[in-house]
Length: 90
Image 1 (cartoon, rainbow, N blue to C red):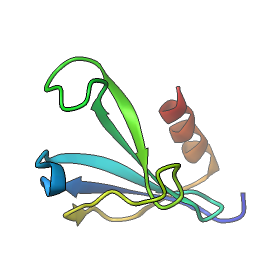
Image 2: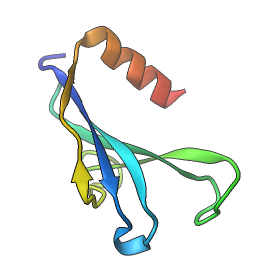
Image 3: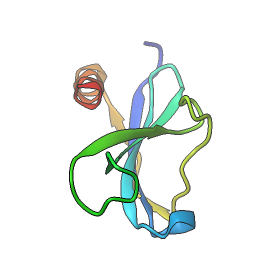
């Protein structure tokens, strides 16, 4: 790891799909940026199990999620960054 990880909460007030939600944007220590959001396991389902959707310029989808507002950027040292990524991936 070369740089410091940074996280930021973002809010999409509806956008193109009309569904308001929040997600977390992570800038990894190597500079890659990935976004993680909880979405329904069954698309557009209002209830039931969820899954983590991965977006962002450095994600497999290669494009950032739209957002309407954002919180402050919060730097993470190595242990909290590793904990966050472990929790997201589990």
